[in-house]
Image: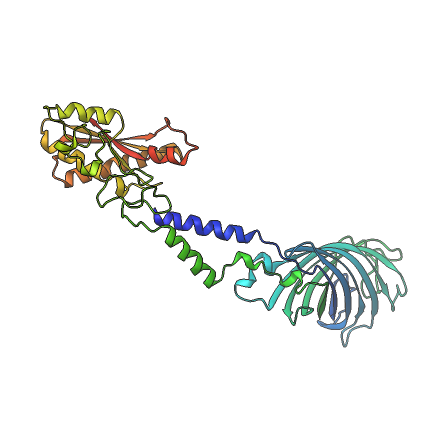
Length: 423
């Protein structure tokens, strides 16, 4: 029970911290330059270098939060022929609107680094390809396009980071080959469809704008992660709450009588039980379920049929063994009920008893049926261990006790029990 309470209280403390909000900068300007590589369409025999230095782009980015944002960027450059292939030179530019995802925050890079980051981006836009040589020189080929890429980052400071980028561009409605030598239909421009593919690889800088200390790229909600000292302090406070000064099985913060004597029978709130209402607590009453004067140690002076009183105590729900949530181990404060039943059976060898297990209404019905049987079996094992012949004892799980208010924690505690029936 203590472990369950400890875990629950710790989770609650961390959940409150997780709701804390901090400010961060959202705007940045991204400037890059590097290589390009047109793949298709190319005329037979025309090739470009694997790494052609001739691309640049600049973008303005806005992050809605530390995970997602959007940007507008402008890219331009020049495609050229590789050595020992026919000459060509083609200018191009593009303008794109893109969505941005900060994978470093999505995948919690902060657990191992806050210096390396990773963005991904995807979007669409339009552009123009203009061959400078060959048959289609100066033809202005207007296209639409889609772009997708990854941007690794290295944090240089709160205002700037180094970034690299690898992007793929797919252009639609392109009329002529990238080298300007051929078109889709000889003598009359046609469309290549969405088959014009090129790559760019760049290196550049991101400049962060705003009045806060850190940009969204690197912002970590530190409140989600308690420090070691904070955890130790919280655990210490919870351990203090869970102290059980009188050893009755009820922690002090729930115990309404924190000074009950050792061995006293108590309820779930730590209060001493007086089952027969004779003013003598059960731990001092030799006949805990039969009223009697203190002069006779709580037992009646006249001869009493103890079996009748025991049945009465059973029917009125005084003799029960209680359990923690989802547990088949009797709670310490109720285990004395087992001793009482054991002593009664030893004094009355002609009496048999059935043990009835119950569960609260939390959880699936079939699971609760099995749990109630385990609870009854646990008490059966204790009675057998106390020397009661197993032939005098039977046990059965009755599943959920629906007679209590399942919205009440105290009522659900009363439902998690094993009861007895004299036969």
